[in-house]
Amino acid sequence: MSGILVFLEQRDGMVRQASIDLWNRLQEQAAAGAEPQPLSGIIAGPASTVGIETMLSGSGTIYHVSSDLLCLYQPESYTQTLAELFERSGCSSLVFADTALSRDLAPRLSVRLGASLLSGCSGPSAIGAGTCMRPVYAASVVASFAAEAERRIYTISSQGPAALPRKEGAIVIVPVDDLSCEPSRPSAFASRIAMTSTKPDVSEANIIVAGGRGLGSADAFAMLDELAGLLGGAVGASRAVVDEGWRPHSEQIGQTGKTVAPRLYLACGISGTVQHLAGTGGAVMLVAINSDRHAPIFDVADFGIVGDVHTIIPGLIKEVREFLKKK
Amino acid sequence: MKIAVTVCFVPDTASVIDIVDGALDRSRLNLVMNPFDEYALEEAVRVRERHGEGSVTVFSAAPASSKELLRKVLARGADGAVLVPVEDTIDPWQTAMLLSQAVSVFYGDVLPDLVFSGKKSTDFQSEHVPVMLAELLGIASVSGVIALKETAEGFDAEREIENGIECSSVKLPVLFSVEKGLNTPRNASIRAVMDARKKPIEIFPAGLVGKPRVRLTGLEAVVRKKQCRFAGDEKELLGVLANELHLS
Ligand SMILES: Cc1cc2nc3c(=O)[nH]c(=O)nc-3n(C[C@H](O)[C@H](O)[C@H](O)COP(=O)(O)OP(=O)(O)OC[C@H]3O[C@@H](n4cnc5c(N)ncnc54)[C@H](O)[C@@H]3O)c2cc1C
Ligand SMILES: Nc1ncnc2c1ncn2[C@@H]1O[C@H](COP(=O)(O)O)[C@@H](O)[C@H]1O
Image (cartoon, rainbow over the protein chains, first blue to last red):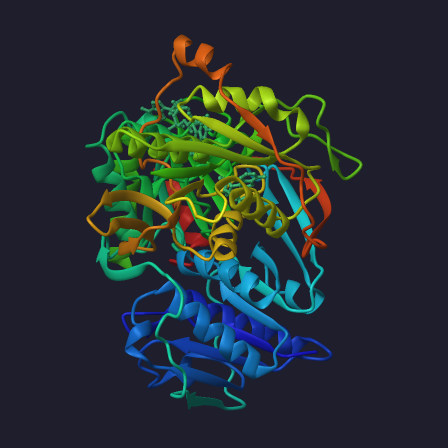
């Protein structure tokens, strides 16, 4: 019983960065392990595989099902295709990056394949062991889970980019064209994706500039947009701000919003309630700007500055601009 | 229009989550309806109101002591509830199995037209049960919907994905798991609370569902407290950021 099949998610014909990072982390881990399990991959849908071996490290076979029926995420077509390829591959583990698509697809497949589903795992080290750790109860607790079935499906939370690909070994692309991707059960039919932003999504951003009620108005978020733009990051929001209608729900972070794992989380005018912190546990560094020296956010921050966001943020933007100019 | 809504109960957000000897201390927990299920139920009630006929039935796999909690759910507009009494050691797959059995028994040979679930439970946040339930019932589903429009054929649904919105169409029967913001749930009126006392809560004993596929092996409290270092001005703050972000 061995072999790991990695789902390489494509959007608009490009393999997504989250999947590439996952593949490379798994290769890294395999290289370090005593008995590495062989890795193979699946791309579902028409996608450009030119140059893919420069992005993916190590060796492995990548099955590519380029049917047009898989352009967009069609739940049933994807489920059938992956279930069939998993059966054929003889692998015991199927691994996904934790994304909106995999959160829908993985539970379907686990039922279809009779597999244990370990989702939102904090790292790929889980895979050999059939165990998984992830935050529960508003991230105030970490739970460990163990797979009981022989087949396992994992979704792994983002941990940012892995080390640069190593060049040994070969990535071999194998086109698969004998699969019917016509859905044979009732299914929703995705007709299009409306892009809402070209900036990184908060769930995937390395840098997040998040704003709370302390900003005082929707207009004040212009300065967060500007700062996030300069730093190459995304804007996030507390629920208070979303409920006021200042920002869209897609930017909400916390228990009833998104869970994020950036390298830097800059919390501006956010008090730091448990419900908000439920989403920020994955941040490597948390920096807080708040006018109240005793705001709870400072209890969980690595760095802080006490003051009014309306003076600190413009000041910081000025400093960043000067810094970038000098570089 | 026959509509099923799945509901689970979770510690309210003010609860003190205490781990004692690797297990959750339940003595001080105050349970409430999972916040995402409030949006699910509200949407179900709105569909029924729009159609002017039909029924909304709540399904919950929960400890037998959850009847009072279910009364509060009924006060939000459901017509009745089905409780499958369980211990809390079951995994999401077993939960989905029990719910699918209960749905099949309750509706007989026909499936409900619509099933609404919450996007995730706020305690374990697994996001497994709704899609597993749809798969077991053999019906289509869309997860995490933020907008729904009824069409001649079924529904047009929108859900959030990274950087965008995925638009899809689906025919009945269908299960939707519901994201925060789909609607604004109503508060139960005193009248509705009174009426809820007369609504039926049926108990369906749990059937056989096999062994769990995932076992919880440990819980550990997270220590989040850090020693915050304070910067005096923006320049110093930039220094910290530049260093950490390898801008320099
Ligand atoms: C079931 C449930 C789920 C929830 N889910 C979420 C969730 O997912 N995400 C979430 O964020 N919340 C969530 N909440 C809400 C949460 O409890 C808080 O209400 C919310 O996080 C507060 O947002 P805030 O920090 O922006 O506002 P506040 O708590 O009002 O804090 C504003 C902060 O700004 C500071 N401030 C004010 N003026 C300035 C200034 N000029 N300069 C600098 N600082 C200033 C203040 O000192 C204060 O600390 C949930 C609540 C419930 C009940
Ligand atoms: N024990 C349960 N009984 C009824 N519905 C449940 C149960 N557990 C989960 N659900 C439903 O599934 C949704 C997602 O839960 P989860 O998969 O646990 O994140 C919840 O919002 C409920 O609608």
